[in-house]
Every structure is written in C-alpha cells, then in structure tokens.
Amino acid sequence: EAMNRYPSIMDWVVVNENYLDPQIVWKYTIARNTRPDARLWYNGMFYNIAEQDAIKRLVVDGHVDAVGLQFHHNLNTDESVYIPLLEWLHANAVPWRITELDVAIPNDAEATLVMQANAYREAVELCWEYGCEAITVWGAADGISNWLTEYFPLPFNENFETKPAWSILRNE
Image: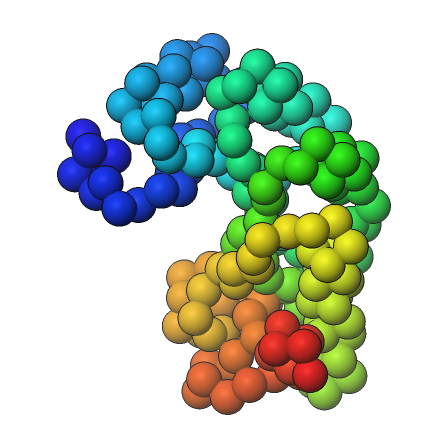
C-alpha cells in the first residue's frame, strides 16, 4: 500500500535485520510485483558471515537490489568483518550505503572525542574505498535521540554543537 501511495520514492527497505525470516523471498516478490521500477533494499547488521551470505544469495537471485549496512559501532569495533561483503558488493556493482552510523563512547572527554572521530573516519574510508552511495547517521544529536543517549554516539552534542566526528563526515 505504501509503495503505491508514494510512487516518487524509488528506494524501499523491504526487510530490516531479519535475514532468517522464512518469508523473506515472498516479501521481496510482493515488493517487486508492486513496484518493479523501485530499488529494493535489505538493511542489516552484517556482523556475521551467515547474514552476509544470505543477502548475497538474495542479490544473485534478483530479490535485493541494494544493501544498507548498519554501523552501530564503539571504539573496539573491528570493521574488517565487513570487508568480504564490501568486496563482493563492489565487484558486483551492487549499490550500498552505510546506514545508522554511530560510535558509542564511554565519555565526552576531548581525547575520547578524537578517538570517536577516528572511528567515524574508518567508516568513511570504507565508504570511499568500496564505493558506497551515502552515509546516514543514526540520530540528530547526543541526548536528543533515544539511541544510546548515555554513550555520546553522534557527531553533535546535546546542544547541537559539532564534535570532531562531524568534521570527518564533512570531509574536512
């Protein structure tokens, strides 16, 4: 119903974080039949190879057109877990985006904010290296969104003042 109501929207996330759904192919089939002109997305965490392999199969089978990778990170996140998938997406010209980007930190001390900015830089570098279309942060500002408010995860503080991570996202 929503896909028909908004014909100018060309990108639709059909399934979010549920690669084990036994009805996943059926959901993409319905979406494809409803809007054959739209790009159909899967948005997921991709921390494990099982999810990566499942989505590759859905792409190869023509169900998924594009992939969103949620980057809910902290200072200890090992982004190398994404490399096999990113290499595959890039080699197969599959559109992808970093979605829901945030980096949780234990405090907002200046040194910690610099480490957070470096973690944001790693995400941006993956985007550039493997050809992502866009990066979306997961919230407006620390303490404003309902996401990890006690861990200062976003590039703006609770007063909407920029943190070092914002400069990274702006490519400064």
